[in-house]
Image (cartoon, rainbow, N blue to C red; front, side, top):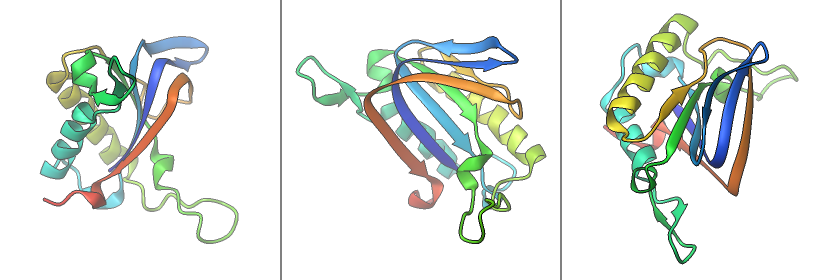
Length: 154
């Protein structure tokens, strides 16, 4: 699993011109599942969720990154993105063979959204899996952090 966390002052997702999800201050998280992730949420994925919610990447009163999403009761917007598993090693067209199959990724994303919502005390919103989405954001900082399941051990 790969997560791209972006600290935002606002973000939204549109599908067919209609806003389907939006948040204020918090995190926009692009979520990708790889073929090696299996077909169920694993302990590593739970660790990544906790890390995402507890990373101190929001500013305190002195301007230092000392607060987590939980500390500020910020919002979170989760957007599925299989292109996080693009391989550009050969040719000019990316290969997505390392991404989880759509039926598996759909199940994993749904479980991921549900688990984040139960662990997070702020607003949790999500895009629509498989939809052609227009994502808008105001990246604050900018702060962008990548979490990869290969970096977390069971």
